[in-house]
Image 1: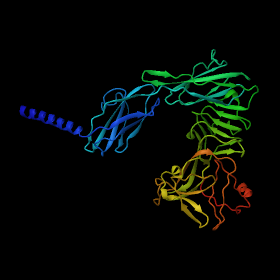
Image 2: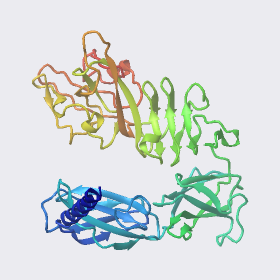
Image 3: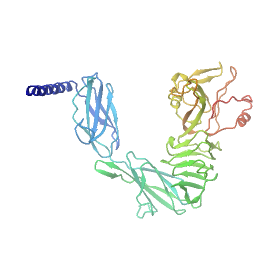
Image 4: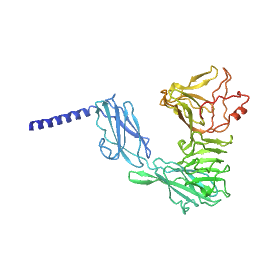
Amino acid sequence: MKFKFTTKIHFLILSLIIATTNYAQCNQPTGINVTDITSVSAVLSWSESTSAPGIAYSFEVRLSGLPGSGVSGLVDSGSVGDGVFTSPLSGLISDTTYFVYMRFQCSSEPLFSDWTSAVTFTTSTLSSPVAGAPAGLSDTFFSARWIAVPGATGYRLDVSEFSDFSTMLAGYDNLFVSGGSTSRLVSGLNPSTDYYYRLRAEGLSGSGPVTSDNSNVIMITTFNEPTFVAVWTEGAWLNDILPTADHDVILDDDFVSDENNSTMFEVKSITLNEGYSYTIASGNSLIVYENIINNSNASSFVVQNNANLFQLNDAASPNFGEITVIRNSSEIFRLDYTMWSSPVIGTQTLKQFSPQTVDSRFYEYNSSDDIYSPIDPLTSTFEPGNGYFIRSPNNHVANNGTNDPQRWTGTFTGVPTNGEVNVALETSGQGFNLVGNPYPTVISADVLLQQNALQILTALFIFGEG
């Protein structure tokens, strides 16, 4: 028994020696450098290992602990293939010192180099916000606005009637605003009065919570007469002012136009403040007499399938900000086609619209020879008023002979189309043209025919559900 026990120890020791020898057969990467440092991110770069070619480079970003020692003190880590010599670093906080370690895997056994010595870097301090011109200025309120600060967990807003902020407006002395917002309604003001506002960003650092310096100061003067502005904030219409066709509307909170919220049917203009969402639910509509401004992101302003966003003034100020419009196909199977036209203007490519459709199954119609010609979906964007013939995604329901076809949901992203849209028609061949509705609302086929009586025959072939 003693003999066997001793032999086992020798075997374990021998194995450890072998493993240690294998571990050092790769050479480390060199020239490790950290650049483009902000308060929340940086870029790591390095030079090729002399053991290359191999498998991959690995890195760890730590606040404490040795590399490979586990999650305690680990902030970011990753691995990139051989031949790649840079990687973004994320998950950082401001004004904090980090330690970066790297190693190289030279074979799949696996064989690794030793970890490198630590390379240190320190993130920048939390930036001050940049305050901008207010939105929705009226006689008794305005919306303070600013540019988001990376890494901010919140903001502090000061409002005063004095440029030196010696006396703060009640309720707006160091007022906290959550980090997801870049606007705040300031109400209860006096007409024809000067006001000033500034902000500070709050965030985290290695030594605890931090606050930035003050932003620039914005001065505004309230109007001397009541204005037609309706503001939705904190789940209600401010001062019980309900919107009509004469009101500029500001949405300073989430809002859904559906059967449960029937207070907004038509407005003069509509502005969605950043950090909030607006949805026109299926079966509902909004009529806008002037323009649409979305200061939030595209996914926050949604027009659902069978909902309508209708603008009446072709000469209105340009719309601002992208929105999302959802449209369903008719009931189809995989390998079936649908004709699509975009209700928005933007940079969305055909492939981004239908990423699961095979690249060779996107077409545009060629009038001269009456055939559908392939179009590159990776570079082609939707042209307003043009139609496109697109096969259903490869992951759509297949026809097995007994099942039912399903609608496919198309999601368009861009600035809502308004105004007159001109489409050049071809008269060659049989004179057919593939065109589509360029607006995020239904249009009248009768009016379309009447206004284009000299250009088209008095017949339309309509495809798709809408």
